[in-house]
Image 1 (cartoon, rainbow, N blue to C red):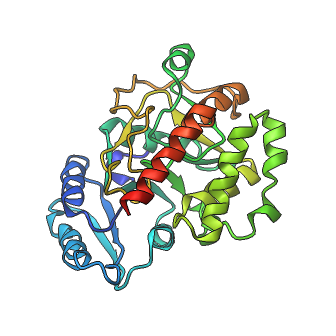
Image 2: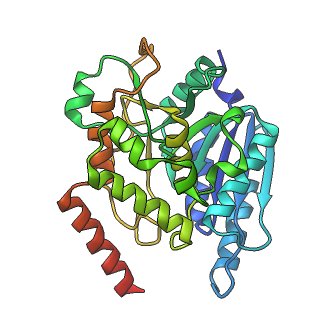
Length: 309
């Protein structure tokens, strides 16, 4: 079994040095033996970015435990999509598997232990693509679940882990997604409500057009197209403290967000590597606010954001 410190960790930051400092402080108790720090470059015309990104990079000096430290500091701004894709590609050029944390993701010690066990257990099972730290099932569903985790059709990237075998730079591209991702066919097969399909379609279209600069839309579309599955714990093991007005995309607190919870040990495992489509459908509808009231709330947030800009 992988020892916790032997699991490499990639931390991705940008212009929030306070968050990066706190992330390094938390990692000190884990003391990973291989630590990778990536930071995008300052944006043209953003006067505060230069000092802020420089302060983020200086956080590497806070790594005072015995480890192999690697840094990737972009000289110019790549943007959210390209910067994260570059960081992940750089990470997996050197490591066969590992944990990925953005600067604002708080991961409990249980997540490190959970991810280490999952990375080893499913290392050669190419059906399994990622390991999440989030648990998004409703309290009722969680109470019914007898195992320590289940499989979902959706990658969840607020604290996650994966393998080199599941990654390549093109996996984040959403270009021409209609040609290789039959979203309507997937929705029919999984009996998704129409509004969930339309929410995902808009998400993919916004990324393809450049309206939203992100990497995970393409990652999600390709995951759905390939039919891969993702591990989701029965307890929340990570939380996002950067969901605020200054966050890149969110700017609000999702109703499903929870603080990290203790994971019962030892783990109990599902007998079959498969997604329970009915359970997953309920979770996806809730997560993506794919109901009339949820869709209206999302539209209202976007309108308010546009007025502030």
